[in-house]
View 1 (cartoon, rainbow, N blue to C red):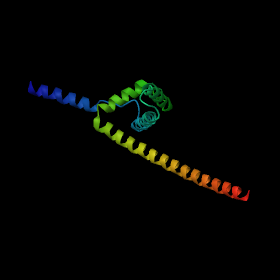
View 2: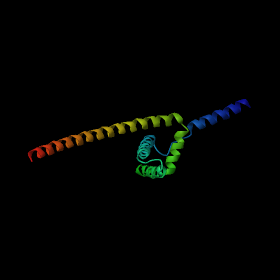
View 3: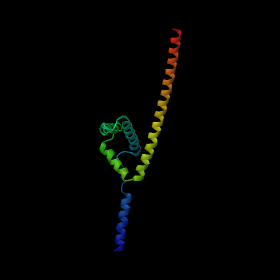
View 4: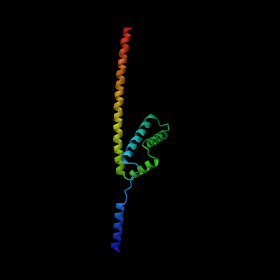
Length: 138
C-alpha cells in the first residue's frame, strides 16, 4: 500500500514537472515598457492638474492609449499584471527596471530642456544687445 501511494505521488510530481509552464499574455519586456509609459502618464498628469479636476478620468483615457499603442487588450494587461503579482520577486524586478528607464528618460528630457533654455537665454541676450545698439545709434 505504501509503495503504491509513493508511486502515485511520484507520478503526479513528474507529471506536474512536465506540464507546460504558465506564461503571461504579454512578454516581460513589453510589459515593462508599458509600465514605464503608464508611469510617465501618471507623473505628467499629477503635475499638470490640480486636485479639483478629474485627473483619474484623464489618466484612464491616457492609460487606454498606452494599451492601444502597445496593441494590448485591457484583459491581457490585467492577466499579465496578475501573473506577475503572484510572483512578487519578478514584479519587483520589473518595477525596478521600469523606474530606472523612467529616470533615464526624465534625465534626458531635463538635459534637452536645459539646453533649449540656455539657447533661448543666449538668443534673448543677443536680441537685447542688438536693440541697445540700435537705440544708441538713433
